[in-house]
Length: 253
Length: 305
Image 1 (spheres, rainbow over the protein chains, first blue to last red):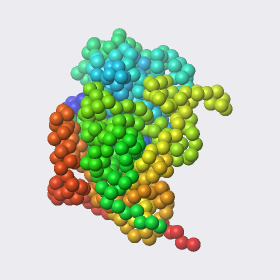
Image 2: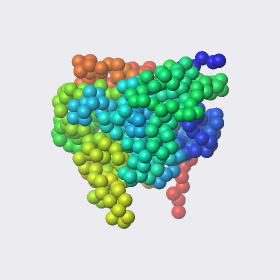
Image 3: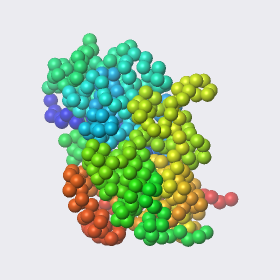
Image 4: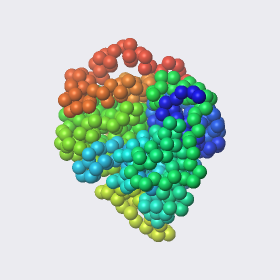
């Protein structure tokens, strides 16, 4: 079995969320590499939307540190304004979107703004960027983050990016037209959401982890999906592509 | 057309006063007007309102230097290296002083500027419904659509006093060509009372007028044009230089404490006369390594008739 880092496995899991031919609102950091991996493996026809105002149907020629890096602009099929991309997102053109998070709760609400009280935060996080827009309006949302108990409280203290609120039909009640979290890809596991109550549940635990370890690092009594299993390890092909894209391991070591 | 070419120090002195609202970093990660930002710090501007989408370390620097009393932005930090230490200090410890933070998303801040650009009082939006950004925001308002009663957030128009935009090239009369992902540059230029362009190159007007579709906004909005080669470093400028990723990592490492930030600020900003001196300090070898390695010219377009 090939050796790989936790970040490489997260990139692989994120890439696997991209289905063939989908339009993906890519976001920042690890998903930049996940999009490149999906394009070079199972989803060569996927289209990437970038909120700085880019649309790409080919992966960039070099590793991206940010979506605005020069290799992402060269060869883009459209270079335009943020509001044009956000308009496509609002119309429902993005099948899938990615966001990162500092905290996520039982119903997939994300906090990337304030840990602690807003007026006197313990930690001031950078904020939404486009994350809250992607969480509001993408067809499906994939969340990529570290799995620690403090990052998985039962209820986040501040909802930067709406998930399923307090569950059930909350999104429809507040007026969100579609979407909601479909996957939470962490350092330990991949989690999904139950169909009607929209509560987070364990879908697969990573090789070397276990349902017990995932549960112990989650701040509420985590449900386990009836068909939960071990996350399939990265294939040799997936690892080869990741290492070709990121030879120095900036995102993956 | 009147000539608008000014030095950086004169442009900042003349058109950005204490208390001004300033849109900066509008193309997100590229074309960030660091040279202009550093001049704001050197001239000790105070009580600025900074407006932007995401800010990749420039807002952090201005906050740490004590220039800022209000932030209207979607994200403030260090895109490739993590959190902004000065932003954390000001919000968590009120160091160097208290500031007001108006949290936005990239959609809401771009629509706020677009509303001002269009001359309308607000634009309705469905993004952010149910979020605490909407709940806590001082100006976003939840309202039913007059058409069908569905909930919307109304995003009121936001007019900056000045937008400072770094561009590839401009002429002395105040017209600018910009390319790449534009972010909210166009909305900011049209919304602002006036625009300062800092440009890699100052070119004859014929060059700009040869391709009017690539002009960002009409020159009637332009307050000043500044020749600032290298003025966006460490952010990238398509066709000129690449992003200096190591600089962002160094900034993250070197600004962890307020004292360390002060030292960084003295060395990188306060003791540096201007951008030419900054680039000299950066070193010819490092600067050369960032340069675009090849030219990739677009096919010309034909405006003949």
